[in-house]
Length: 314
Image (cartoon, rainbow, N blue to C red; front, top):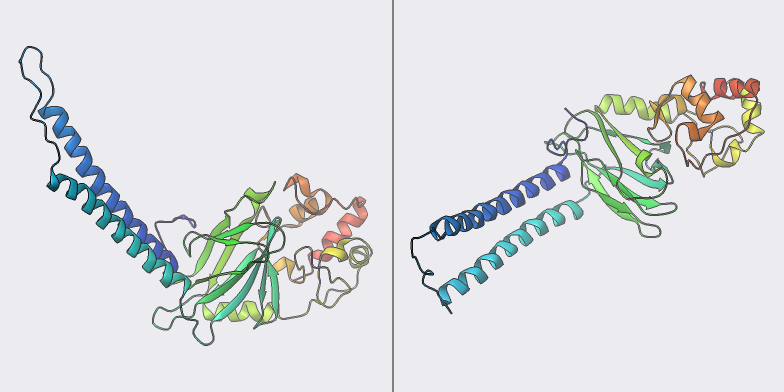
């Protein structure tokens, strides 16, 4: 099954939106069938046959019944659609927040995602980890959506609807995934050159797996002192990136404390392997043209050393 299949919702908000879309689809399909059937009947019943001498059919003017029908029926249809949509919007946007619900602050950057778990003291990037929710005892995840630069839009089709991230205007949404797995999405609001590669990966884990991930992320990185670390800390890398326990405290780029724990780099644009990581450091435009990360201009020896250092950040 496709991880972006909108017809296979795996979270309560997505299920509500899916149900509304089916109701709307069936309603407009019924309207189409009725209108098309009337048009087809009129075209066949009153078609002009050569030589039949038939005159125009009887003309009807000022029929109160017909005018009431084409006024009242559309109004009732619109009211029904309005009420159905309102019910879903209110259920999704005004859901109660149970005690102990997981909170994540999502910040959209050009062109990557930052995730902060304030209750857990965790900061990560591009790969959102959440626990699966038992429908009998829901454990939803509430997302606060912020933008660091321009408009973005958070959309994981199987988990919820699109919600915009607007500068200086916090938004909120929530998900409560009912099955484990990896769910894909991306920024759904054009935000610049690499909008199409501002991808989303949501890892829905069992409670035990999520706890193990939390424990790992809460550890301070303790890489052995190396030439790569010295190169990293003596270049502009430290101005953009954070590595916990080191002088690197930059906020402009992703937190690299547990870089190797992620499956991808460059907001999902490439797999997280030593080869692609080295290429990313050497020439980001080779993977993501228009990326905000500059080419560092390192020689091969320093490039290999920095790559080896980053591979220790687990």
